[in-house]
Image 1 (cartoon, helix red, strand yellow):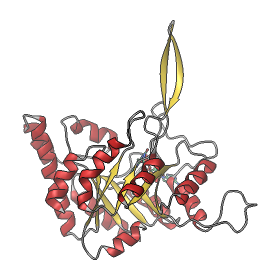
Image 2 (cartoon, protein in one colour):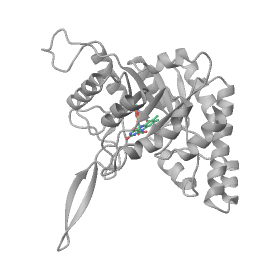
Image 3 (cartoon, rainbow, N blue to C red):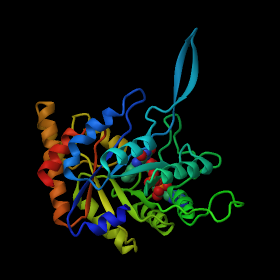
Image 4 (cartoon, rainbow, N blue to C red):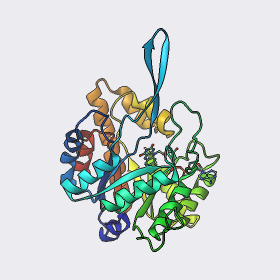
Length: 318
Ligand code: FAD
């Protein structure tokens, strides 16, 4: 079922959803199930599966020689989605990127997931790979998520890349896109970022999931700004609990979001990792409860491959 339909069916009750990462190459699918199993009692209507593009690594060949290698450390997004739908009978949402995909790759990816009975897709640009400073699209790929959304919308109308193909079967994807309550790191201003978010919606996106945030006021004022710019689709908040001290630096660095001073002070006071984990859970529970009281239909948790703290939060909130 489409995400928009899940929201329509929720009848004012806030629903629990989460995102998982494919396991590192070499691990078994059971490592994914072990993380999903404890969360199923909260009845998620859908589960997102992230996509991880290629990376360049260097292998030592001896004699000071290095060989450049392309690796995908976390393949398996589509297979995991199929396995989730099969095992748990809930909708799985694959993320798809502009980065690393030609338009032809994109079309074939979409055909695969359509054949698997997947009806939602999260369309993202992706970040620059580690060896590049700025994002570089493939030669025949998309530069921005808005262009990717257009390709998916075309496929939903039965328009494929090969113009000679006639009377093609249309797909029926519900398209989600990302947004940043604290602005995307490359955007010159929040206004500019919202302008391009609106473009993604105008091109066919039907819902938005936000980057994580730790101060609900940032989400509320972002939603207000989006509404005043005429964005009417659901804006699903993304939440992540702080779990270790390293997150104090890692989260602002990697995700370009601020941590509230009160949260930082609470974490600094902690004596053990378990204390930090508890502070992270309590903060996220408080955020969740406030969002729920505001009538938000879906809360989306970034599990980052660890379900224990998400379960602790969900037990107190849902
Ligand atoms: P876009 O919407 O294309 O925007 C990128 C930047 O370009 C923004 O600054 C925007 O303002 C600007 N912009 C957009 N259009 C134009 C234009 N026409 N002209 C000029 N500027 C423009 N990454 C992964 O690798 N895998 C994942 O699975 C993944 N999942 C994610 C899930 C969510 C909910 C979110 C919020 C992010 C996720 N990301 C993921 C990270 C995402 O790929 C990066 O944040 C990326 O840098 C931006 O992606 P986007 O789709 O928001 O890009």
